[in-house]
Amino acid sequence: MKLRIISTKWLILILIFVAVCVAALSAFLSGKIDRDLIISYLESEKNIRVDIEDVSPSLILGEVNIEGIIIGPRDSNADKGLVAEQRSKPVPSKTRIKISNVSLKVRLVDLFLDKLSIKSIIIEDLDLAYSINEDGDHSLDSLLDPPKYIKGVLNPEYERKKKRRELAKIRWKLDSGLKNPDDDSFNASEVPMPTTLDELIIKGGRVAIKLDKSGNNVYFSKVKGSITDLDVDPQNLKEHNSALLGLEGNLKVMGSESNLEYASFDLKADGTIQPFEASSGFLNPDLITSLTVMEGSKIVSLPIATRLASTLEQLESTGLDLSVIDDLLVVDNDTTFSLGLRNYILRAVEPLPVLINGNQIILEKNSWLNTANDEHLINASFTFSDKISQKAFEKSYEYLSERVGKGVASAVSELLFTPVTKKGKIHIPFVSSGDFNRPKVRPSVELKDLADAIKEGIKKDPLSILKGLLDR
Figure (cartoon, rainbow, N blue to C red):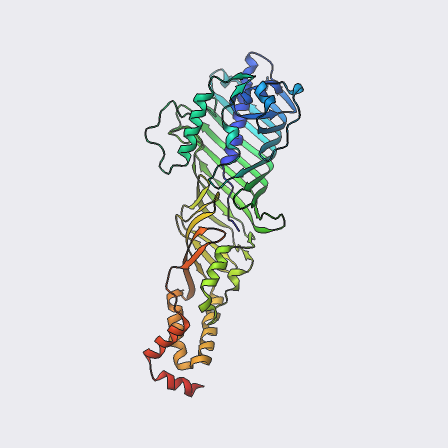
């Protein structure tokens, strides 16, 4: 099973599309706004094909409604710049952005001041689909490239913008970023002018992500989202580069077979984000937000838990019930924590505690998971509940009393459980690494073998052998 959280990058990507779309409103100064105008504008900026069913502008009120939006891979229709009526139907694609309706309201007076002030954007019925390969590259990448041809003519800006995009991709994959980047290579061209936004609301949506390496699928459904108080100035990102993010929905992880469910989480995310990287002007590769996993969220299969249980078999043989690790894991209470995302690598910004089946698992700070290739390094601990811990201690004593006598049982039980006991509960610190589907899990403390513990217990009190025989 794979634990994955949807990146906020797709939400920012939608925002960029809408911002460019709203920029077309400035065309009212020189002509009529219609779907061909907006399609032409978008296709001259990005390597995409755009289809729109209808556009209903109200220039007096500063409103535009855009219906039936489909954005997908570019084709010859887009390269030639054909008008909507002349185009063939778009070929169905597994990489797409579909929106039933976008309603935009802007302050027209600010357009005369070269500033885009958006009062509201309402997106209805969002459908986003793409795939991610093991290197972390997603199929939306090519859509964000500059177009090679615009209206059948070679784009004079293609080489420069393509180079800038390639440098941006390299930068995203560097931990520290490029030193002293060429100012001409990076800018916030995705935003056409200084932009503010009172509110962006997503009413219903779904996201489907195909993970190429494993064949698994991630579905984010029942999506409700908002971005408020957006403030972006491409020329001054250090001081104008913020937004409040709100997002909720159900995250489901499915296997390559459609009926194989690994996990289902009800999630909420909120907090202030910086949409762009101030030094480069490109989408921020290092986003941090507050995430809440809701009570009742479940994990059907977790390889880390299964491997951890197998490493504790010597404790199980003396009375510890490990079935609570292997069984269906259900989150007991709403849990909120800070999560960082950089290039599809999730990391715990702070310790991440979660109550599961009455037990507590804590992921330590800086534990990470690469959601593209499944590599991970997680330092964590599993603490059993009071009930399970006390029951394990009692069963261990009973079992050892039958095997070696009461005289030795206490000493052996102490040797077995002291390294894994904290505040009266069984506490197993462990490390998991490698492929998340086939993790290498090892306890961070040395576990005593039962036979060795018995030998050590006898050495502490040789007379306990005789006492044990008499006890029997």
